Length: 124
Image 1 (cartoon, helix red, strand yellow):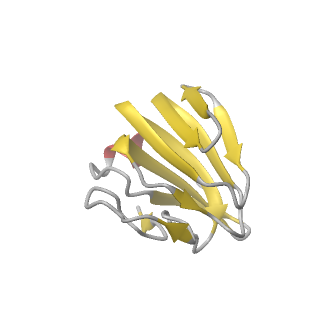
Image 2 (spheres, helix red, strand yellow):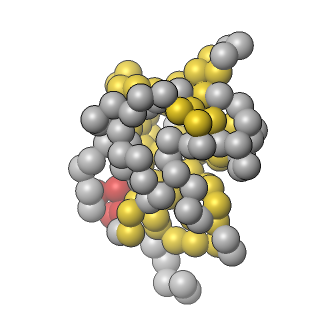
């Protein structure tokens, strides 16, 4: 795609939480945006790292040995095989980079609550 994509417009086009939208693709990777609030689920991606960029708000990523807090403009990569649980008490807009077809709840996870969309991403 050679036309610019407005992340602001992309985020304004949906209201669902924990339900990422695929903004574009780069090689074999999806560039996804999502609105988040509350807690996701503990999960692990066995075969891929997971990249997070906070566009607005604050995102907390719980790891088994520590907690990482990301604010607007912060990035973090969770290494493959690392169990983690994203959450956002006040809400956030985030951008993620993952291989196309990666399920949002990873390869291993606990019970998926109703407010979490277990998906490989939705088209805008």
